[in-house]
Image 1 (cartoon, rainbow, N blue to C red):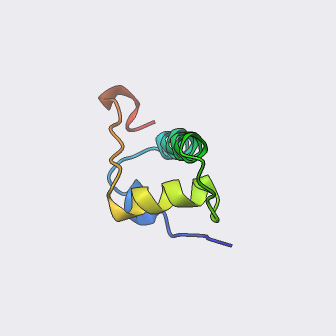
Image 2 (image 1 turned 90 degrees about the horizontal axis):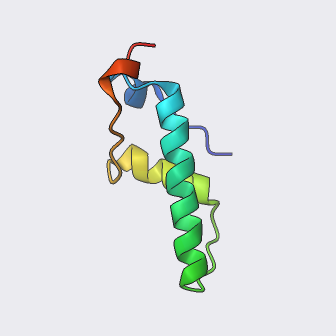
Length: 69
């Protein structure tokens, strides 16, 4: 099971809510794109999305008013 250390991502004042929401959104996009292109993905879309976020390929922009909640 993939269980990354999220402290590196969350130290930039990113809320867990924003991380979860962005991961879910990106995972849906990955799954839809694979289905559109008739591709079979062997890993779960959530794992692929989290890998992209951890690698810095996908940047989460969070509104200032919810940063320190």
